[in-house]
Image (cartoon, rainbow, N blue to C red; front, side, top):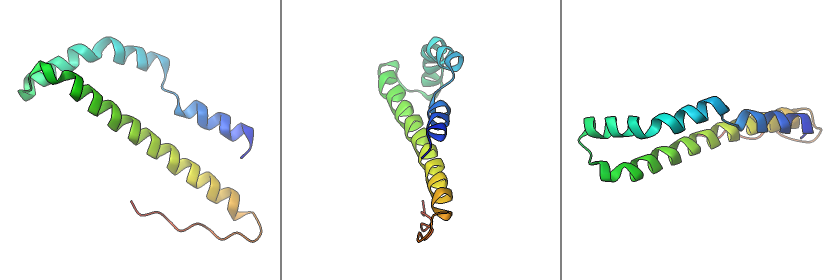
Length: 90
């Protein structure tokens, strides 16, 4: 892949700095509020936060993989002797 496309993907994969800071500043209070509303003891806050973080990282990773698959398919479409990759079913 061309370096320009790789750089673009790397930039797209980064979280905006302002959003990251807002999450850091508000996550404790927000987690406590919704844990209380859900009737979950505050002692499980770490487990809840960990689970949410892992799910978000996984969703972001899947989005990047889908984009890479599209870029690779587009690059292969113009290459001689290559067949298009079959679509993945999720």
